[in-house]
Each structure stands twice: as C-alpha cells, then as structure tokens.
Length: 251
Image 1 (cartoon, one colour):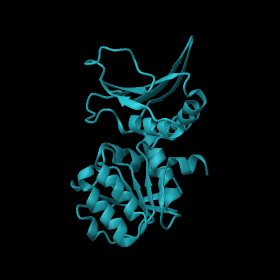
Image 2 (cartoon, rainbow, N blue to C red):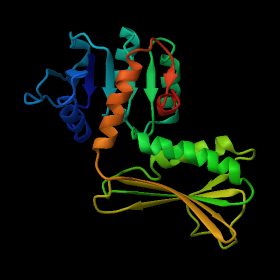
Image 3 (cartoon, rainbow, N blue to C red):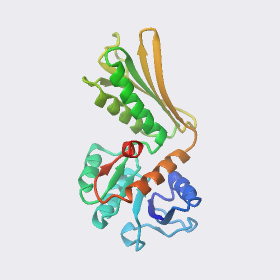
Image 4 (cartoon, one colour):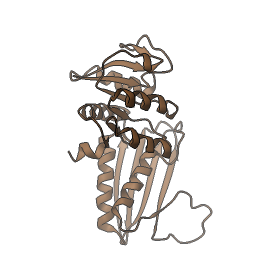
C-alpha cells in the first residue's frame, strides 16, 4: 500500500485524484494539504503542511507555483519522495527541483499523461529520422481558462525534439510580424484556447508531398490523475534522484 499526501486536494485535479484513489487497493490518500480546509474529503486536510503528523510514502503536488517553496521544503526536510505535477513553474523552480533531488526523490513531468509522454518519445525518434527533410510544427489546444501559452507540454515536446536533433531549431511563437518565407531552422509553436478542451497536442512533420502527424487528445482529466498515481507508486520506491515519465515508459 502506497500512502500519499495530496497537495492541492481541494482543487479540480486534487478531487479527481482522490476519487480515483478510492477505487484502488494499492494506494491510499492518507492526508491532504490545501489553503482551503475540506471536511468532506474523506481524509484529514491541513492548511499547514508542517503540522501534518501522518506517515506517508510520497507527496503528490497538483496545486499552484505559489506553494512550491512550502511543498519542496517539506519533502526535502523530511526526505519524502515528491511527485511535482504542478505546471507553470519558473526556471528557478525547476532548478530547485534538481537541487532537492539530492536529498529526496523527485518526479517531475510537464504532463502526467502516459500517452502524452509517449508522444514525446515518438516525436524525438521521428525528428532524428527526418532531420533536414521535414519541417516541424507543434499545435496545442486547451480550454479557455488556461493561463499559460504555450502549454508546458508543448514546450516539453519542443525540448524533446531539439534533444534529438544535431542542430536544435529556433522556436517561433508568432509569425504575424514576419513577412518572409519559413526558415528551415525554425519550429512553429501554436496555441489555441477555447471552450472546454481538456488538452490536445499535435506534432506535424511536413515534407515534400507527405505529412506525418503525431497527435494526443485528452478526453478527461482522469488520465492526468492516473499518471500522477502511477508516478507516486514509482517514486515511493526511490530514495533520491530526479525522475520523469520517460523512466516509467523505458523501465
């Protein structure tokens, strides 16, 4: 049984994770942390994580970047494995995750969906195979309430592709001010916001007389919850180090 403290338990994703965890026999949410107390959660919820006396095997954080220092400090001090699922982290915060991984195991993924991470792996292989022959574009779609653009997942796909290339491509986020032909050394990253789109990412490889598309569409938030729980089970068995979904996929 993997015992989890769920940070951001009162939020939308926190409630999805807690709901799915209730159906599992190998995992239990033993406590929650949130700025808003919730007596209906089915487990004790603390507004001060430092006052949580419950034994746990891992922490899942699906909250807000503002809570980053509190969560990482708690896990580092107590040497508790951390699944950092919160998006929109700054470069400094990402560096901080690497630093604390010396003291406690950290699992970090821009997107907790197994399918999205498989798309990243496939995109890397396709980029290496077609280098110099195909132009590459990334298109991401999300609901109208999403604050950041492009999505963290789109940026991660871009970084994965550039890792596979002998010459990394320059990301172009806006062509409205450019009146010139597309340069072979660029990669377009496009964001669409509207309605209740959960999440869709497409990598387009455009060659002469042929087009290859690698696409993932999220139909519900359950896939992110499933991935976070899977990551928690994985990371609970680690003492230190920085891990990502690729470690699970290639395990």
